[in-house]
Image: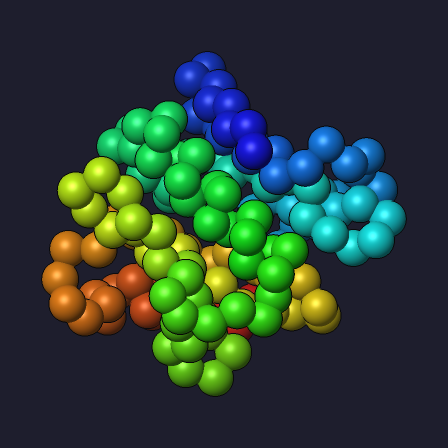
Amino acid sequence: MKVKYFTDTDTAHAEFTNNNVHETREISENIDIDDGGNIVSMTIEHAKESAGLRELSSEDRKIIGTDIKEVQFGWPLGMPLVRKLEKDLWEVRSHLEGRIARVLFTVSEGHIVLLHAFIKKAQKIPKSDLVTARSRKAKL
């Protein structure tokens, strides 16, 4: 996995595989898929604000990306990497150095769609993070 950040546009681009892009879909972000329907890459606009990239080291981003890739290619998965939160909403649980990251996702038309990510600071998922993920899921 490669993550590139462009400071001039505040845009991040995450490449999950080296496959050729067959199509780009705009869901909540720009998602590139190959001809088999697998996610190749994702572009996140306003990345500092929406993805918290300012606070994540390259090692943290690599861990999260590797966990997401494991979910993508091994779906369906369960604990300890993936936990179901409610109908059609799961979390990827990434263990970073001294903290824990969560990436909330759903599955739509056979594709894993990343909805929201945050660093876990409390035992329960904050309601605002769930609301964000649910709102994005409703737009699919």
